[in-house]
Amino acid sequence: MNSRWAAELGERVCAFALVFLLGGGVALGSPKVTTKAQAGASGGAQQPKVPMAPVNVPPSQQTIPTVAAPPLPPVMTMMGPMTGTKEACEGLRSLKIEDTAIEAAGVVDTPRFNVPNSTAVYRNLPRFCRVVGVTRPAIRFEVWLPMEHWSGRYEVVGNGGMAGVVNYSSLAGGLRRGNATASTNTGHANLPGEGFDASWSMDKPELVEDFGHRALHLTTVNGKRLTREFYGRPAKHSIYVGCSKGGGQGLMEAERYPNDFDGIVAGDPAYNWTHLYAGAHLYYSQAVLKDPESYIQPAKVKILADAVNRACDGKDGFADGVVNDPFSCKVDLSQIACKEGEDVGGCFTPKQIEVVKKIWAGSKEENGKQFFPGLLPGGEGGANGWQAWVTGSAPYHGTHWRAADSFFRYMVMGDESYDALDFDYNREHDRKMLDRLAPMLNADDADLRPFMKRGGKLILYHGLSDPDISAVNTINFYQRVTEIVGPQTPGFARLFLAPGMQHCGGGPGPDAFDAVAAIQRWVDEGTAPEKIVASHYTEGVLDRSRPLCPYPQMAVYSGKGNAVEASSWVCKVSGGLAKK
Image 1 (cartoon, rainbow, N blue to C red):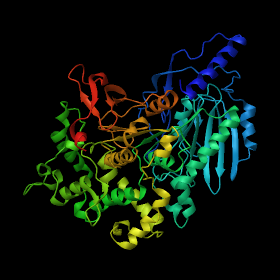
Image 2 (image 1 turned 90 degrees about the horizontal axis):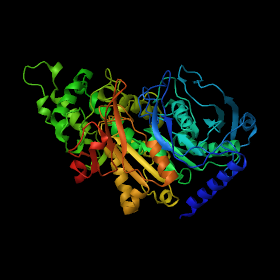
Image 3 (image 1 turned 45 degrees about the horizontal axis):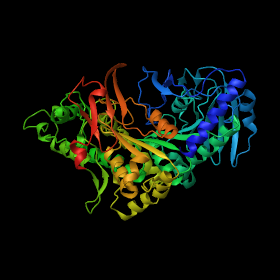
Image 4 (image 1 turned 180 degrees about the vertical axis):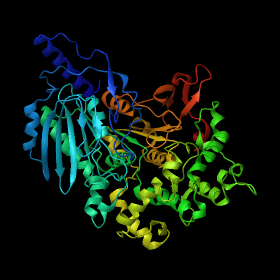
């Protein structure tokens, strides 16, 4: 019996005895089915559409049944109180934390929370103690503490885009899970509605440092302190959950601050930030925008998407709009190329064909070395596909361009009038201006042995149809971790690839899954996820499910049962992943 398990058992035995001494008759630890609302599920208006911490469940599916141990009763045990009081909450206002001021601490008694200075509303919330604080110079954060039935866990949620806002959606999700939950704006405020605004960073390296890593770490430390003060005991386990920028924040924590968390969920991670912005956001934008004749009109995206599906969708035996194995997908682009005399509105010109090839190939340095991997074929269509990220509704309206434009003008060059299309990484001055930011922003150190040795667990996931960050980028990181750590890697870190899922959700593939429950089981019980079941909904109706498998395995139809049910699929090394 390992010592930690023995200690936990001892605590529960003592708590069990105390319950009966006090007249209670509930046996602790008996299995119980509970329901858990997902992170980000909102009953009202949404926050700005910037990639945030993982939602991965449609609003219509408010709860997912999970098996969990019941909470300890609201009495004093050796583990401490599992409830909080109004007096304890309000007392947090006077708590002294270095370089930090607690601006407000009070109980929210209603199940409805209106986001400050926003139309967003979150419903079905338990009573909680809301703490608002600021750490110098401008790191705003909030900690939400359940008044009853605290799980004993502490959760921190990440950001999306250029951050600049507290992630209320994911705060609500963590609270519904019963976790004490914290979020930060990472030390600055964005312009309203501009999720990729970087104007705050010009000539302010201290704010860039906060955005890169310091703000989340200090919020994590401060939130743990507030949790301990409120409940009279520290959290049993601490977890982190984030996607996109938030996924990169998770890897930054594992690398720089390995003692902060017991478990980390990092989705579609923007971890090598400077390479992502130069080699993806800007590179794709330059390919589409530098020559006006190269621009792909948004109406043409469906032509490309249909060609990809014709070539590759059915290779797994099912024509469901999902390219299950994009690594083996070969598309003959000549089939969509304009023929002589053909109306160019319904086909791709030679220059547009070249743009597609560049985006799929990815950016390279002058010596031919891959700088950043290209997007994988599949998932080009739909509202969150290439039309949102690559082409936009018109030139200079794509999300790749909006992200690159602000970053290069303000954070890289410090010149509001700078034209990002002129940037050239192979030009020494440009390269130096970009690379000076890497120590503050990049989380690309794959030596995670310190995190592993302290018992940390890591779940990575990535949508194979992500039109923002190529899934190959995350595969490359995981492979580097494996090269350093060796065969022990799956014992603490696993990567799950989601065919057909776009950026942090959406797309034609199953994208509704519960990575948070998986990391909690791994941390709490030591049970590593052998698969994570993902579901797909059309207009709120479940139409298929499929397992997400730990890399390098992928889901393969077993040949038996209904193909729309996850139970008919098995995990095995197959297809293009077998060659990688």
